[in-house]
Image 1 (spheres, one colour):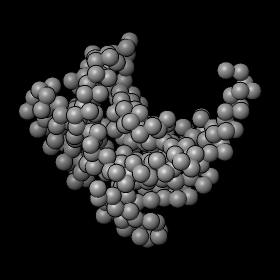
Image 2 (cartoon, helix red, strand yellow; image 1 turned 45 degrees about the horizontal axis):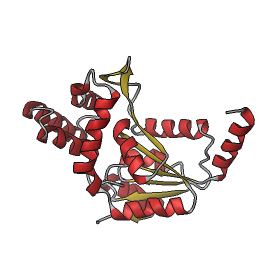
Image 3 (tube, one colour; image 1 turned 90 degrees about the vertical axis):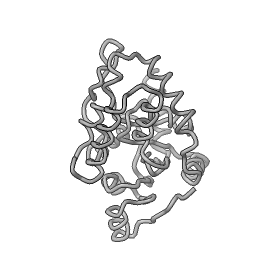
Image 4 (cartoon, one colour; image 1 turned 90 degrees about the horizontal axis):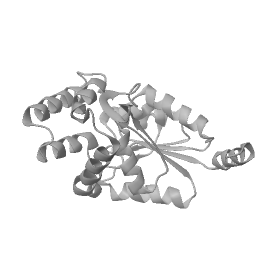
Amino acid sequence: MNIKKKLSLNNINLMKELVIFDLDKTLIKGYSQQIFLKYLFKTGIINFFNYFIISIRFIFYKLGLVKSPKKIMEYAFRFMKGWDGEKLNSLINDFFGKELEHLFFKDGVEVVNNHKKENRELLIVSNVPDFLVKRIALYLGVNNYIGTKLEIINGKLTSKIAGDIVYGENKTLVVKDYVSKNGFTLDNSWAYGDHISDLPILSIVNHPYAINPSPELRKEAEKRNWPIILFNN
């Protein structure tokens, strides 16, 4: 692509309003990684002991006893060590079709489609591993997505996380970096999130929405007069 054409595409992006979506409990009912974990146990890919240990660690994280889920994620996905992209994609496609496809909030999908009709640029951002976020983005027809990256060396997964997880303040840094590198703008932007960890993202846009908010986020949303929306379907 020549420089003139690249500049032209960036100008087009700058004209579009950006809409940022969280994933779990915002677009999907529940936590996609836990749903994935149950699928792995049901299909025999992980045994009961590993399933139990990972579940307990996730509970500790939800209770606030573990501040960052990075170590939990690395432990949970260690079974993928040595896998290539083809094997991973086959697993994800099977999981999506059998377990995840029917768990989208219809109201959430409608919001996505309404923004697409307004010719806005959409971005899904989640701490969920990027191979899951990518499959979900494909299903929703969203071109831009960010997820936590698993390390790949010589075409094989190592089970380690590459860099940091996409969570809390780091989520905001990653989004700002993505916006800058892709020629987007946060002018007149939207964001949808459910958890207090989404507060930094919601705080940098013009139109923040608390979706099915956690108690902490609901409190902040009420204090700041942000719209609160419940997706029940």
